[in-house]
Image 1: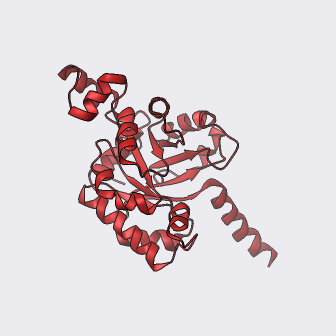
Image 2: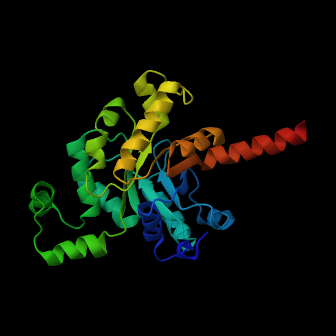
Length: 265
């Protein structure tokens, strides 16, 4: 790992964003259950650039991941939070607590513009924020510099591409100010395509390529969640640069299955 990308506990989001802007591939995983911060002690140095915490498929609240977020920061790993709110204030609140936000099922371009603005133009709200969105007019140059170069300079905003409609709107989504990466949700996407969970289907593979290519034209990294190494390697060969692989529970299950399967053989 280059010295310029050595772990820096004070600014993991800045390091992650810098890597993405320079065209490097970044690696991360989903965390759905592990909220005990001491688990980070067992993460090998230099393997993860980011973690996406999510309360989608469990009984947790996103705030339950805050102790983990601080432990990850001390390890130099950025923490993004997946939120299901379509409320701009809620998205801004997530970005005040985490290094960035992941927006599921992002397909409505106008809605996404406002959510992105709420994330990367904090603390502007109301009429002042609307003027920036509609007209590009800031209250002052000092305000613009404070928001874009200080307050939100390192904020990461990631729309999830999970529907055919979202793919049809790719060019518009990629042109939204503040979009840092695109992240494909394969379960929702394949279900929306009529081929649920067929991650090796030619049509889905072609869809992944379409997303990667559209994002690459705007110098935006893109990738898909996968739980199998060979599928993730295929995506990397397709040009994926935002690699979110597996999750905490699946990785634990895989190692237990492999280890104890061999011992019991």
